[in-house]
Image (cartoon, rainbow, N blue to C red; front, side, top):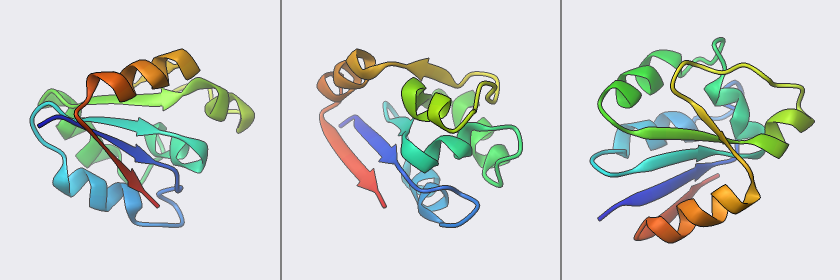
Length: 101
């Protein structure tokens, strides 16, 4: 069963992304929203495990409006920006949504 994991907390202040990364597998995807967008940056403390998961086929997305609101414009290689319609599409193409707070 594919799961869309949404993470809204910064990995600099919270372990939500770390916990999420430990459970992702198979057809799962990760969407970084709100302060979670910091998790997709080069300086993220989750950079290495996130990169390994992307190499294993996990798709990682950042909500473009949230990143822009925080002045973030560059992310780890392989991280994709999505807009609100893209968020809806991801929600519809996964069988389950897991929110990490």
